[in-house]
Image: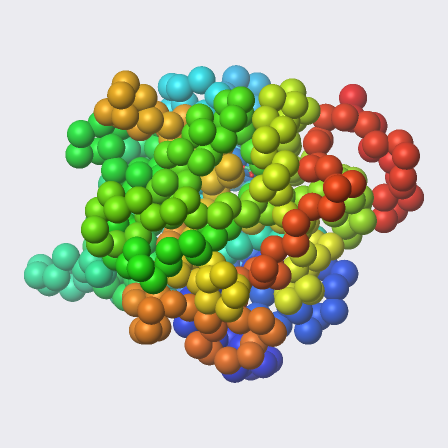
Amino acid sequence: KLDQKGSDHCLKMNDRFGFYLTKVAGIDNAHNLHAVHIKDILSTSMGNLQASAQFNYMFDIPWLIQQYPVEFRSKPLLIVHGMQRETKAEYDMAAMNYSNVKLCQAKMEIMYGTHHTKMMLLLYDNGMRVVITTANNIHQDWYQKTQGVWISPLFPKLDKGEASAGDSDTHFKKDLLEYLSAYKLNGLKEWQEHIKQHNMSSAKVFILGSVPGRHLGEKKTAFGHLKLRKILQEHGPSVSEVKGWPVVGQFSSIGSMGPNKDNWLCAEWRESLSTAKGLGGLRTADAPLKLIFPTKDNIRLSLEGYPAGASVPYSIHTAKKQQFLHEYFHQWRAEVQGRSRAMPHIKTYLRMSPDSKKIAWFAVTSSNLSKAAWGALEKKQSQLMIRSYEIGVLFLPQMFGAEKFFEVQDKECQNSGEFPVPYDLPPTPYTKQDRPWLWDIPYKDLPDTHGNMWCPS
Ligand SMILES: O=C(O)c1cnc2c(S(=O)(=O)O)cccc2c1O
């Protein structure tokens, strides 16, 4: 439906970046005009599907099959997950009902790692597409939440013996192949081959991937926050242009990051996100940091009510060890997209001008604010230890023909030049009374949108 009319000038603008939010049920449909549902992504209007691969964390297999048009439901489908033991067995059982579905289990060899990556590889009779998203393959992730989706252009097949490597200025194809080969899974070989056979020179985003491991030497900057640092060092804004510009992080879960900001958050992690091009190592004054994370009342008053919090797994055990975070916290507010009550499961990171009218770059990714996702330096910073599989994409202005920066789109579908940041900028700080949402404690003082309390077992 992406190419259908509706307010096509909006679609044009969005086609510019390929970045969409998911449709939200229960809000004014004006805010869904250039949002996508999973059925839109899999629809016949996107191409005549021959086979697909679905990477994700959570799957409802029968529901997922139902999202494909009926004529595509028997095409080969590879499901890539990281589940083990009982859940792996559940997935194996569910897949037995579909002779076209194969399962592929990602190796999880480092404790506490998860397979967070949410990606679709779609093979058509005339090319292929890559889709990277933040939504699980379950109904409620595509129902009343704010989720991000990047949909690639249609990548045409390379002609036999065509000399072109079919890569883009952002090394999209090379980085995607490097990410997939890091799984070391025979089950992925056919999809690595499909990618090799397609021309991805039209891809304008950079791949931000994370793969479990202790990455050193050449590989140290291949994944996690050091990959972002490397891209910004080579292609980012110049130090003088972004001096003092805040770094904004927005996410739906938070890992344990030590007893104070200098352990990881405002050391290596902020160091990477505030990297600028040029005079390497010239220390710019520390970039202000703004972290957007739903308050308890954001969740309580949301479309879903307290149950939205089941997808915002911040634990009191972790939170009580890192109260220093509180000074960085900002509310979830998305009036610009009509999604203040559609709780975020999207994860985004950006560098914002002090007047919040411009951004130097924008990333949407499966990575939450955690060392597991972004990596933590070890052994005298000689290696980057990552626990989870993650993938996201980075938008740099110069790759999209913008001057130096993206103008922030401050009203829906204003005009094509602007970047559709999914929430209100500048972010709104927590009030003195605001508390971050914690998912594993009861809330019996005030009822939610549906009149219920929250009593986690
Ligand atoms: O989208 C994901 O990748 C993801 C991963 N984990 C989740 C957890 S938990 O595994 O951390 O307990 C609890 C609730 C929601 C989660 C989720 O949405």
